[in-house]
Length: 504
Image 1 (tube, one colour):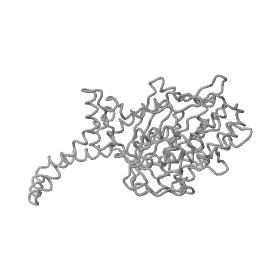
Image 2: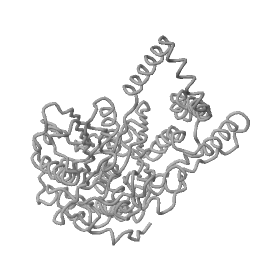
Image 3: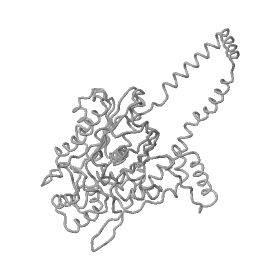
Image 4: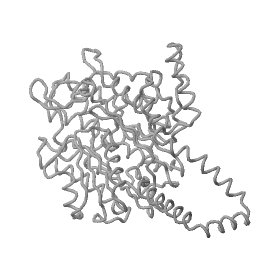
């Protein structure tokens, strides 16, 4: 962010993302090709299997009969061949990766009485923190440019005067969102809570004792041997991290269900100071959460919506600037808030650059990969002025779920990745309708696409999110059918109003 002055009011304006697609470094590309190299043996087996099939198709019945006679009188060969076949089959079954299916998911829909429109937000800000007029004007400017509409929700604690940011109120918010989304999920899938073998919850800023996972287990009386994980402090990209953790657990534990719940808690994280870098989060974050049901059971493929294809995680925490660009700390008078660095956009661009150059070889058509790699090597070896070929990620994905963290990030990704307004529509409308719901925003976006009837069998979806630390994480899904919106879709009562026209 950078400061500018207008009419005597200091306003933070977002810095632009660097043109990361045109500044890719060779070392980042190597990460993606490492994934391909790790599967080189499988790729080499394809032509061998093709040759075997062609050879077998040319055998006559007499040839097959002669082969059988030779084996019939050679017991040693039969035994050796059978042993090799059984051993190979066993190794394959035991080591092969299991498909991970997304059976269904649910997003929390705040009720009308928790609505927080622009007018209410400004009134609350004035009452809750007694901000001075310059600070109120700053908040007003941020809200006007935020991309948020008047239908977003705020927790019950923010509908009380005076505010009550107590532990009890924070627990009330967590229970409201978690149980609301999970009730919808269990009802739509007809899965019993005791059937869940793995539970992952991510919430960055609220981590009570007992944990959020323990609250869910207690509420739904889940079984005693459930594998539960509570992720904290990992920011808005933690939802993809939670999916990755659940995926790894499902690779180990057969015939199982996993629930991933993603949320953020606002009650105790309202910043009441006057540091502008800490005030921005007050304007953007709103009430929300998502619950996702994953399965590794082959029997669930027929009723599942999507199959998980790839998860690629990028962590830039070794860099000091990246580590501190989203940082919870006290201001000069001891008030706690989350500070956003002026370098945030540049750091996010570098993290995304690393992430997509790792993801690219996994998802881009071979023609795009060759053009990209050849121009990159030519630039490296011969002429530094040669512009690298910009891969067209629209050839790899039909749908884009870009974390609705703020209007500026969506604008810059649309421009840098040469996306159309339709590709970023779900992100913009989610930000407008629900605000920044942190790690759950990518699921509100997917629900938007389903409510619009755009999801077709074979469509590929890219979910990408950024988080403190600094992290950029991607998940790629494949639609297994023409996906219809589930009962309880958060857009079902208002999808006819969208997309709305925004003042960009």
